Amino acid sequence: MSGRWEDWPPARPIRVDGGIRARSKRGAIGEQWWSRRFIGVLESYGMSGRLARGRSYARAGQVLDFALSQGKVTARVQGSRVRPYQVRIGVLPLTSAQWRRVQDRLASQALFRAKLLAGEMPHEIEEVFAECGTPLFPRSATDLDMHCSCPDWEVPCKHLAAVCYVLAEEFDRDPFGMLAWRGRARDELLAALRQIQAAGTGPGPDGAAGRPAPATGAGLDVPAPPLEQCLDGFWSPGLSPARLRALASAPDAAAPDLLLRMFPPPPVRVRGTDLADVLAQACRRLAADGGVPGLPGGNEYREGGNLT
Image (cartoon, rainbow, N blue to C red; front, side, top):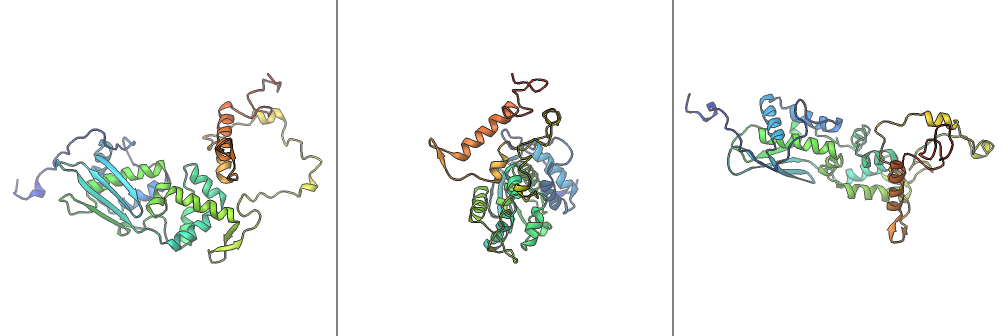
């Protein structure tokens, strides 16, 4: 064996307890489309060997901790030396003007905010960011500023790769993490969306806020005949009780208080508790009970539709 250090076999990392272990045990890391898009940027480097070692580090829990803030992620990764390596992954955050355009567009569709609150990043959000002049995801490796305190000069090293894989699973768990990385924390973004929606304004032709939104602009535009044309059958169910009971429930139903998230109630307090919290608790209890009392399919009905 020569005297060059790169010809020596890689040293084994010091095993640690309590590190952040990737949930994925084998194969690719990243379950949702948005986390896979992020991992795609990492894998565009083409260093399969380093990335494989990074996955092994992530699954072994070598990432001790990480912190995500506006424009950067910092982490500590335990390698073969006693002192953990310091890792930083930077991305250019959106400007205030860009975020204002994004927020106006997101506020114009209640479904965007509802999906985010339900832990899902809608596919259309990429188009929203693109139309506002900035991509949501880094377009290539050059959009990421990566640094590690290890002696390896290649980017990404296995420590950087391990943090990226752990970060991808964090984005799986909470898509707001990706948005926070680009410059807007969850609470700040949702507060801005509620403020825009409450003001009753929507984006103008150039994407700027300021013009009054149509009556249906902030909600769901569901075409229906005028009320005066359907008064005769207004209280008649469209389907029989037996047919309603036979309908299969939706798989992986959304959060029971999803409607409240789409259309927040007024800031009213009931016996010292916010009305939103009271209604959300009622929605969860109804969902847990299996239905609304007195309606077909509820848990107060037996076979044939008779009340218990």
